[in-house]
Length: 157
Image 1: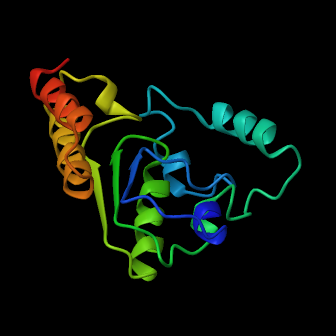
Image 2 (image 1 turned 90 degrees about the horizontal axis):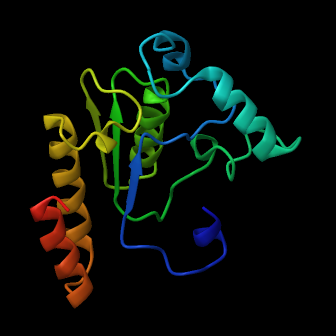
Image 3 (image 1 turned 45 degrees about the vertical axis):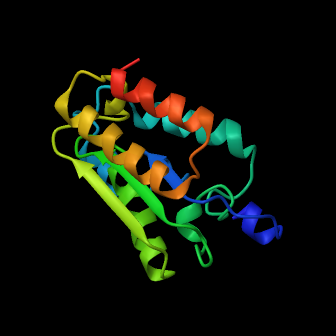
């Protein structure tokens, strides 16, 4: 939002993995998945938000994008796990993008926790990373460094 509002060139696309898009902590999945998410906790989010905001309004769109608008944004791909406490943030980000007529894909992977892609051996992680790679490659020009990165991804390094 700051890039757009500042009149700077927008990126070719946006990738959001398990995004924390609402520092008010109002998503139902924060409570619903509290016992299921082995990586993230309400306590950690609360303390992190308090330290980050330093008294500012947690519903400010620059802190919590779900309270802003995504008009004129590039295409967005959002991935989250069904068991994570930030699942609703991912869904709400997708709804906001769609309401702003931004091409968006939200994929919630069943049984997965926060940032499940770090466990690259899970089949869901591989699918997610491959889908993200396709999204990025479709929006970026082929350069020597991009080709090297693509080859490394295919090798799994």
